[in-house]
Image 1: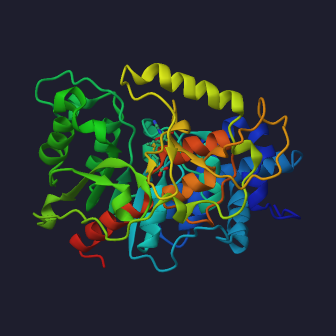
Image 2: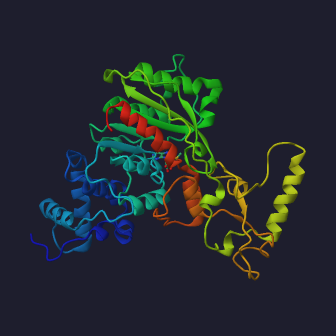
Length: 422
Ligand SMILES: C[S@@+](CC[C@H](N)C(=O)[O-])C[C@H]1O[C@@H](n2cnc3c(N)ncnc32)[C@H](O)[C@@H]1O
């Protein structure tokens, strides 16, 4: 069968097709974009079958009167390769030095750090639709979804060097006494461990909230270390708390980093990076231009915050807004609660404002505003070419959930050196 027209990447990854062929989209777009990114490498084999199926469904949608064979779909896929351009802000490196996978990928903080060091991402997984949108816009790849599903795991290729995972810290109670692999079943760490067990990467790089250290009186972390060291056979030095502000961003964000190395590599020492001497303050990343009036708090809301803070002050529970000075360092970005209000700034450049309808009440005359999503991006070390294609609400959530790229990159540099990739 000869099709008169090719089918384009946009047609198979576009919105209309996704909406019309809902059942087709769960693995299809991820498999297709992973295939296109890896077509010159053996990893593409893991994605080929599903990518062809996806193209077949797209052709059937486009040519409803034609009987589409798998061979035709394969031909269309090969034709698509000619047109495929990695013209996104963060393309994969052309001559990669190593390969990694990006689990709980969010918007790709790990990916930028690893790509900066010459790494090629060969698999990504993230189930949040808005985060996937941001990821696709910036990397040209749609992550696979729920990593707890066997089918998702079946797409993970073999022989990558590093597994990266900023996995969410779900409270998990450990049923068994030993604190081993089986005891973590039903948690996301179980899935990370399961993938390490099946694929045996040279190194693993895990990131989590600082609270993991004391969670369940230290039992959760002990179990994680026990599983990595004893069940999986990795050399895992004691985890380290790393603060983003020590690595070139003005954000006080402490996170626990856990690294591990496959024992047969004979590695028995590792030093986490030392704080760098560069110290930035908020003014270094503050918007240069006047920002939209929508980021300024209304007088009414500001008064509510002030009153609330005063009422809670005597209780000493830390509630309230906080204004970060230009010379100061932002509080850790978090996606919920008072996340945004704990990072207010004074910006009196809004000169001639009139009462607006976009926010309730009149804009405060003190010039107090929220930081913008772009400022949050910079606080996490995302370069300005990173595109923010989602609403502000989603963007705050995504940057709050993400990692501080420079701290990840400095640590990854040492991981690479340790496994002999320079
Ligand atoms: C702490 S964030 C990690 C963010 C990421 N490191 C970044 O730089 O943006 C955890 C992410 O895991 C995702 N997630 C949680 N459970 C998941 C699952 N079962 N499968 C895939 N992704 C999941 C969440 O949607 C969230 O984006």
